[in-house]
Length: 303
Image 1 (cartoon, rainbow, N blue to C red):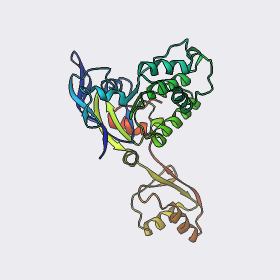
Image 2: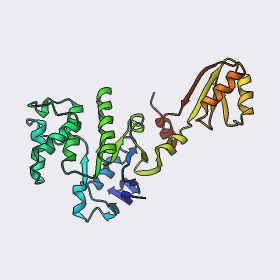
Image 3: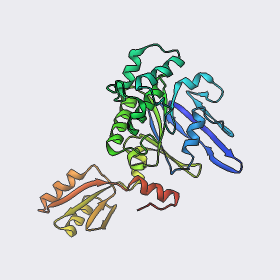
Image 4: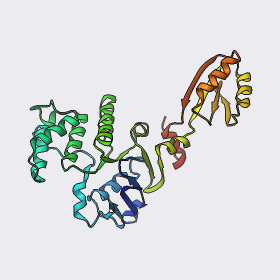
């Protein structure tokens, strides 16, 4: 596998408290890797160590197979946005980008304008950053992180506090950066449902420890993905399903839940129609990612 980032039992300890406790994650090139966890779970601490903003107490990490802590050449390959973006409030979006570009020795104004276009801020003109909405500030923060043309982008809670439109815009940006630009993204959030819409791989972290790593497909399969079926004759429907070889079935809430062969919904409705049984509802559903997380961590979901 082509891992762009790995951490090896990386730990950050403050006194007797381990904010990050022997965490080993594996991020493949091209991933949108979602770190799932509550506030205080250790996500930000992990990201700060990878981004060079905190020093590990023990353990290590590698970027592109090289030790990230000791190889200074790795840092420009990492773009990072943790907590609030560091913006100059009295400068425009372009002026903020220009300031960072100068520090990096970049003199290509068209490149900077291209970054603004990528994050949807090309029409901000003379508007100062202090007049930006939260979503605009987050998008400018991402543009700032892209100035160094990183291969790995680290984003800590970029959708926290955004309204639905802002979340949708952020989702589009992440998709573009991953698919069109080929940038690997490490993103954290406690809004698990939204994270599930963009991430391709997940690491579940709780109380400083990594509990599980899984691809999106693996995680969804553990979230009791199923077909839910309601028909005009439920008893005969069960008989037909058994005849078709379905055995992983459950009847609840006036519906038949099918936990296998989930791509055969069409075949089921055809078989029922041949027996003059009307399909009133058939849909593919899964347990919410939040439910799975709280089940895994032994916590409770807030109503």
